[in-house]
Length: 230
Image (cartoon, rainbow, N blue to C red):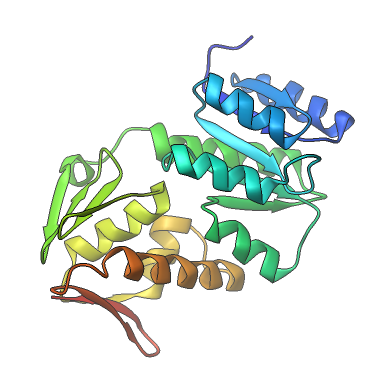
């Protein structure tokens, strides 16, 4: 087995599962394949993973429930949903439970490899000099970038990678209007309609995380973007 990043793949389609496992291991990644949600969750508790790829329509425990369980124990590991479900509501639900990406079947294997590589690079790659500043402060809140955690006036929340990235931008530009395209290009590297919708879900979640800090609030700037107002 490869010694590269360790990937949890939960896919009940045997042919697709082995195809993906073989392809991804050919990229130098280690892939652990499981056919249902219960076995996937058991494996997650037994091993350390750098990325989780979860089908939605799984036996015993579906992908949404599996991701929810994973997020109870680990807010950092990236999650990709792999599914035939293409409705916007399903995609939004996927991001609400903490997914980092959502890939609909059928899909290009080559594109899928690049998506995985990009997520692994962002979550485990080298950081810029700016990102090496580990602690950011705004109002009565402290953002710990390296540990992906927010302390909002004493209330500590573990963050996903994208949540932390968005808060970094807000904290570094506190009091200034930030265009939506900044988040789309920096956090998602995309500006599609659906990605813009998913970003609204993330902003709503960040508002909840900051709710205990009366000194801060995220406001919409109509037609432009957002501002973190001190």
